[in-house]
Length: 374
Image (cartoon, rainbow, N blue to C red; front, side, top):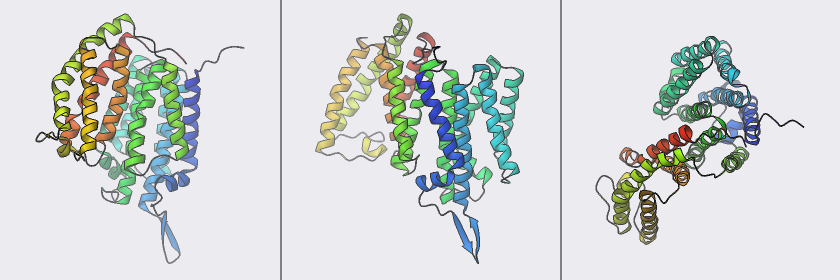
């Protein structure tokens, strides 16, 4: 019996994306009821009922999210030469539907870029088309994260920040940004490693929506996501890095050990004893109050931090361990940065782990590969 051309992880991801697309597009009302139970679907006056703006915003964006899920299925399941064209065709189709059926105008810059990326991949497939798609994903991810309300009000002027429609729209735009970021990683990083990294991006966003915003996908989808996240990393394996990657990892590892040992370690030791620095203290940059329990936890953190700084600086830690723990660390830090109580100073102060995550991931991708199927 011939072997399947799809890995087990790819099969699982395909099923998730296809079912997600069908759920969001065909069963949008149920998703809205499950994600935003407080949203009123319509208002009636003299027996004439009209959909509320919040419901309309949610329903339209769920169609886009469903389309993005179908696009991800194309990127996972179709041959390399055809997948971007198919994905962009789907995006063009949903924009056309919104213009011709719903009477809505999507953000013009997005429409122009969509057409440009589609034509580039039709006329110049390969490196040029792929780079155009990666640029499209990167630029729109950054824009959607930086100004979600602007994206929403470009289509619905009344869905301003502070309104229910604006809140629903902003959450949906965050999901669109997530899908674009996942597509960027999936296309930019080949094989099982790309699948793992792409899937991991959703963890802090889903945690924010469920735990902070009281929103998020249905519980069944949350459970399936967690199971696939665990399986994708299990399937990647835990083999040591290649010699070239291990050697290259020594520099960020030593730099990180030095920064932690001389900077963050004293910082957390002081916090453990109730000494909070001005401007950067935990109580100043977030929701934190010192007591005996927090002092114990910070003391334990300081002990482990000292050990980690030592084994990193002396290169006793393996490069793969350094890389993988930074992926988990970045997810945890990003979730904290999404908290409404976290200040801008706090977000910037604890942004450093993301830099080391990106640096170590670049080394793994460029010098160790990751195209293995599982």
